Image 1: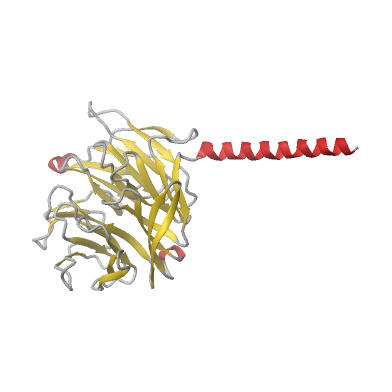
Image 2 (image 1 turned 60 degrees about the vertical axis):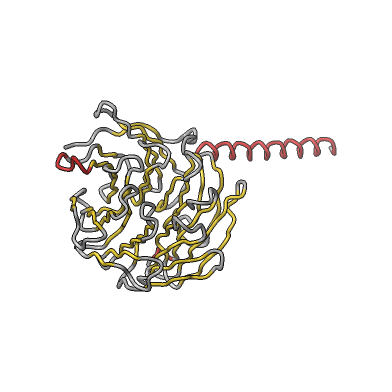
Length: 361
């Protein structure tokens, strides 16, 4: 009987181990090739890779869906498969976006729900500037890579503001949108040009020396939540909207409508990013809890667009960024309070993939 008991125990242990292995295999079949991952305390809103340190990541987070409560600006370093916390800045309101300085490796800008813009020095771990000119939530910040000096912010007070870190107040305010501003992004090619997207369903392009927009584009029929400039072609940009699509545009051919429209997300597209390594690759993060990485090459100007879909998050995906040094490496953050870094060229076995048709005119 003792021998039988031992034998039964061994069988149970082998069975338990086999079940664990089956579960692990099943889980892996749904996940991308994870390079690193970590849990954060609050909901993720934005991620930004450092332009100096290949493994350093800034993450903006907010408590209680960003409606009430506090926030944290977090700096993480990738060490092996771990994302280790370097610094955490506790804030009195939600933190919605962040951007690195292009001239100083320890400087990062972040914006909050109380209308504030902060400049943080990681060496001293102190805020070197705090501005509070916006009268509503600041939802976007971008530190220019072309002029390498100026910062642009966009807020729910319907205005954009340009800042210089050596000045104690904003350089200029831009007020032409009729609704809240969701994104503001400097052109990587023209040092004085930036774009903004708004709840008024338009994208506006601005010269920072002129208070009036140089172009106003009714890019979608619903709120436009995000835009990004192609890193290789100064005339090409993309927009993402509540209409669940990503549209790709050429500034020289706006009268013809978008070059193509990427369809397939089930809910609003919150953030898009063009790859810094490949001209035809961009990523879109959505409220449908997915991230899509698109290959939009259109040699024949017709035909479908290829994509991979990643479903490793369990809540809204609001932040995405391509690593500047490691090709195909992407970071994402979500309301599920996780930050992930993975290889976007190696989707999980069960990843959705396919094509999206050409734009309808």
